[in-house]
Length: 64
Image 1 (cartoon, rainbow, N blue to C red):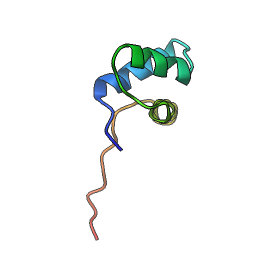
Image 2 (cartoon, one colour; image 1 turned 180 degrees about the horizontal axis):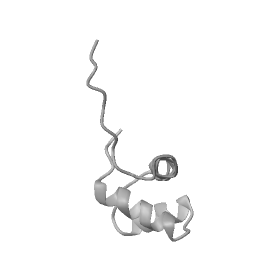
Image 3 (tube, rainbow, N blue to C red; image 1 turned 45 degrees about the vertical axis):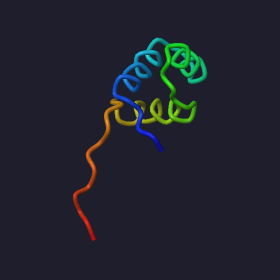
Image 4 (cartoon, one colour; image 1 turned 60 degrees about the vertical axis):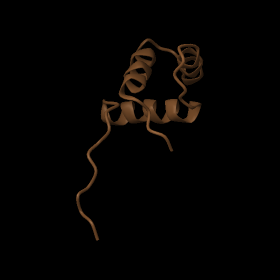
């Protein structure tokens, strides 16, 4: 899975705060030339609702 740029994540957050639905956000981003899948839009919105942020969380340093 390709990473979604920080700009796209922030854009999704702002559009979601404006009350747009995931499908509407997807089409707006597509029109702007940002290729983000609808499933990524939904996942990022869900992450925002749970964590209050769209930033990537730090990964665990524990290695087996």
